[in-house]
Length: 173
Ligand code: K1U
Ligand code: ZN
Image (cartoon, rainbow, N blue to C red; front, side, top):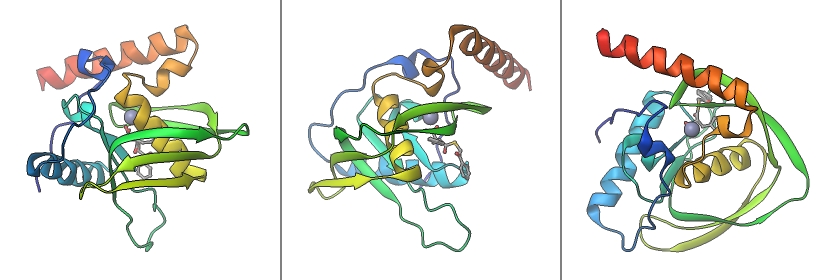
């Protein structure tokens, strides 16, 4: 497994609507493994393919963040929210493409998600709590949407400027 560099906002690849994965291949399974390695190393609880520069509908997640909990890595190809609760919940979200910036985002508290696993089998499962928040955040990435797109324009602009500065500093280092 290989760790891949994570793109930092603003980057045009993070704004693209990703293409569905037509057929599973060893190349895509390797990408999923690399993304899990990259996510655990960051550390994070989710990662979407565009964050590593691949414009395909693939996400990985593992929201078992308590110490000592058994890891539950998931890779979802072509994930879709097929139902969402009317009840909403707020969570202070972060993003590995927007380091050290956090903001409250309100989303459906529970979602039912359909996806294809690494063996090509279709699944549908209901998610609540942090898993529901994270899977929606990751599917948003596949549609070119970042959590800062839910914020007021001024706050979004301030965060974007901070990220531009961070990228300039990293390029100089
Ligand atoms: O998509 C990403 O950029 C990953 C992001 C996922 C996410 C976090 C919070 C709410 C919704 C989605 C992250 O993993 S940010 C890092 C993070 O939240 C975390 C890191 C270590 C331990 C626990 C959480
Ligand atoms: Zn993110």
